[in-house]
Length: 217
Image (cartoon, rainbow, N blue to C red; front, side):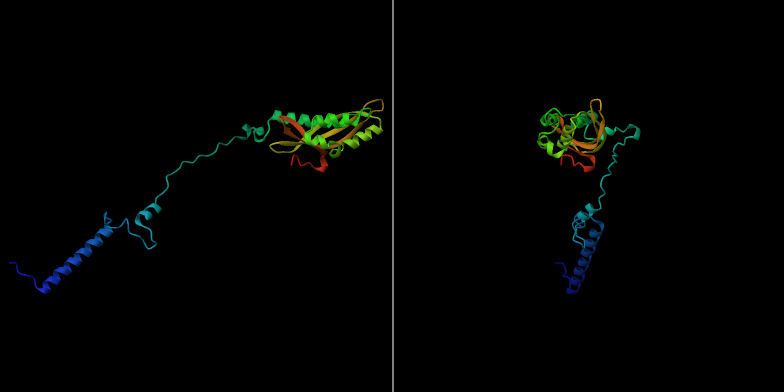
């Protein structure tokens, strides 16, 4: 039979095994060998090794995509507006026609006939309040007292403002009296708001230019 180790020898062998196991565990942890626990171990902040690896990943590089820039000489200014050139012209023609109707008066006709020429170019809402809001009633009464027949003249001077539905023009308006003693009466500048209504341009407001004009709002 093999000779049994003494109690002292057994303690020495056990201690050597413990030291060997501890040394092996330290080596595996430092070397990061799978199973050594380096990937699953947590740091003092509580994140795992895998999570720390994700935090340090760099995003993939993305090539820049600059917007195209147009040279000044190639810029198309009308492309910046909500209306085409033809739409601006059509709106201006409506404003001009309305202002000319305002200055055109025949004292021998009824006031209804005078207002009708403007109502045909106005929105339905504005046509109902035209006599009260535009000063046209006072102008007709004045010309009637003078027994005057006058032709209206108007010219678009500028665009005051616009949005995606309406445009406000500033016009100079005249009323030229017919006859031997005829004269030109400058009625002043007016702001005329026109807006799209049923596929056509209609006058929404007509006021002296210095009184302001808020368009269709």
